[in-house]
Amino acid sequence: MTRNRKMPLLALIAGASLCAAPSLFAAERPSSPVAAYTAMSPEELADYLIFEMEGFDLDAPTQEGGTARDRLEQDRTQKVCSAIARSGAALDRPTAAKISALAEESIQLPEGGIALGDWKKGEQIARSGYGYRMGHRMDDHSGEPPGGNCYACHQLDPNETAHGTVGPSLAGYGRLRGTSDAMLKHTYQIIYNAHLFFPCTTMPRFGHNGTLTQEQIRDVMAYLLDPESPVNQETEQTAQAD
Image: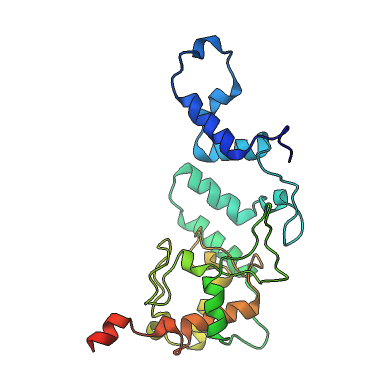
């Protein structure tokens, strides 16, 4: 991008805010398309700034190959879930069943069966938010593998206070559920493509999108299920009380 051709995104947003404020000179200025910003929803404004005003370089290369424009292209599941979210309607059962079926078709189980990996590696993956970022400081996957950023949405280690709450707490996940073959498969499927059990979830499809490898998924599973993992230990407060 060049400064002459493209206005910075923050400047565009600031301009939109200024248009919303009354001005003594409003009558002296000719009408401008900028005035329409105030009538847009946040989603519409974002689309306008990116696609119409070229506020982002859509031809920029991505780590997975292709361009930013390719990355923004929605697949069938995303299109359906986005349309439902925009309409404000509830997800009906027939549509949910179709989304679950698409998710099930996408899941590739490991050859030789599902086994737990290394929970210590899984912890690193769960804490890492590295990967797939673009811009002037593009993430280099050859130097550091992408992480799962699990703590952004979930609590895992019960003694960890820095965690998100978008998703449910997973503290004690393995201690409460065990490590049967059925539970191993269930956990693998959720990480690979959570839409199988939670249609239109906001959880990333780590396996379907290739964000994490099968080995990384097994390591994250170990972090969740291994009895030795911090996830399955008592909280410090409980231990002190005993």
